[in-house]
Length: 287
Ligand SMILES: Nc1ncnc2c1ncn2[C@@H]1O[C@H](COP(=O)(O)OP(=O)(O)OP(=O)(O)O)[C@@H](O)[C@H]1O
Ligand SMILES: [Mg+2]
Image (cartoon, rainbow, N blue to C red; front, side):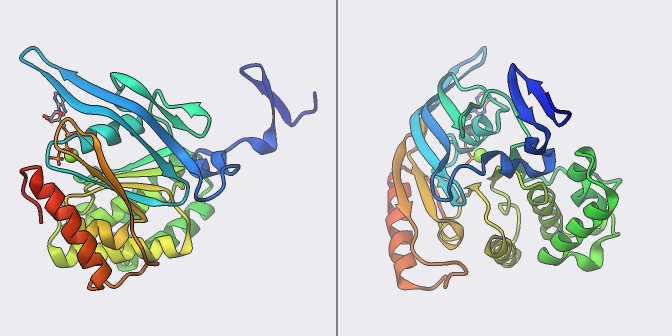
């Protein structure tokens, strides 16, 4: 065996095939853009506590295509976060499978990056150091870390705050740090659970535009949970519309138009009223 070869689980690998934790998207390079990267099949989740049994997700199947942004909308409490937690590997489904490429997803892994609504940033680190955190853990050399964080600081409009501490930032800025920190790792799939939910409408629009900007230059696979139908229409390639709990798939909608989109275009107004009228039929409040 040559020096650059190694054996993992009985299989022979060439050292050049090893994938760094900061570029897990490369694990799935063999899957073409637009083909299924994640396959969710017959997913069921039942929560059991001492007091009650809650069926949260009822036999859901859908694909996440490589390079797409797919939004999940559905009534409050229907099971959106539950589905996301299953994809992240933090929650084991009661039954059903989730495949990422050819691998069954059973635990959390660096091929799935998560953006949390409550920021989950490190208060003792600067903005730059927060963004570089995963790269540091992955052992990326300092110069490369710097060069990469510089790009994300710029894309997210944070370049003047690189050395600021987290408590000096507004909510919208904190959320940008959270997004940059996930994006910089190039995970195969990025999972976002209402990332802009806590922000005012204007900040929210700006952050949506920042996200569109990043996507213009770099293909990403993103699952995006939101309460806002307008946000889903502005950002998504497809929208998965769920029923009230237990979540079932009502419909998967292909959203027309390249990004950046004109929020006021009539085709979106039509889709908006179609989705909203379904959500209202599920007896919940929606904006
Ligand atoms: N850890 C848990 N233990 C017990 N029940 C839970 C747990 N997590 C969620 N649930 C229940 O599962 C259902 C779905 O919850 P989930 O958080 O997935 O909904 P959601 O669609 O994300 O809601 P929201 O829009 O309000 O964020 C709810 O009825 C909730 O009470
Ligand atoms: Mg939720």
